[in-house]
Image 1 (cartoon, rainbow, N blue to C red):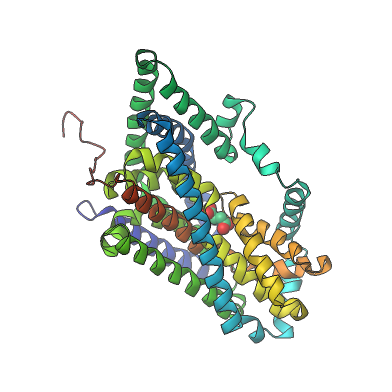
Image 2 (cartoon, rainbow, N blue to C red):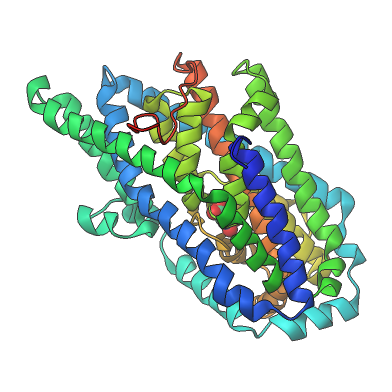
Length: 440
Ligand code: ASP
């Protein structure tokens, strides 16, 4: 395996993981996989999450303090937010266009609804989703702004769910480094510079284990999957989501070739390890360190851009998730609440799915929690909510894998375009884990 490019190694690991999963499922070896294989995947994801906070902190502080003046930051920040919102609205519109044209809900029979309802509507998972969604809904409209501001920097850094708080703290620190005399700023800048370099090296080391880890992650997904009959019943719905996600990737590739003047294939081959990890872990947050490393070192985006655009994107820009929420909401209405299928509700879905994808955490399954909020915003009958979730539950994990891949691709694309527009897209400078190893 040594000479193969990393993305091929990861791909082979994934394929072998799926095959192994199917074999184990057919010989009732689920217990073995859960006891002996799943922990390998879990350790890998933990390691990736471990370096997320130090990486964001170091690279954002370094990125901002390297800016020559703060107005550049304002410029970049504004562009980032505007482009993120635009791509998300486009994603939801693609999703709504497809689901309204293909109408996957019309193929679902009464028996299928009953089967899914019996299996999932009172399950613990469905109840947890509804409780989480309720907590989100009770928050006021500006609560997300309040939540973004940390009141304790150390606490924010100790909790992966508070990534936005870490970003706010890092931005503040980076800006203030620009405002103090240079000789005073230097030691702290050097410290974060060095921390950044070291943490990126950790990404290289952790990635050495990626082919084995994705094997474990995918084998676990396969043995935990639902029975094929259920998956088949939802094939049309899943197909619409996947088609929409595919169109979104095509859209990014057009952006890359038109605005960044790069070959889409070149771009994909550069960021593919991050995409494959997003797919295997279903978490943009877990993939973030790798996305940052690939975009900076392999695509050539300046750290000033990537250090801000990518972590912010991982938390607020979820094009795949919003597309999924649009499709799922209309699919559910087609099956359970056809009278709700009016134009005003579709517009409402665009707005709420945009906000919901911003509010979704970058972890597995988050998109489904926020879907409840989308449904409630259009007045979906609350007694039907558990059934609505039951309807799409069985395929949520595979769709989560696909939408997370799109989320990560979107972040990487937007950061590359912004870098190009600000003259910050340079030549790639790939670093290997053993570049400075004495006995190389
Ligand atoms: N798993 C997705 C992510 O991390 C969020 C979601 O759609 O559930 O980007």
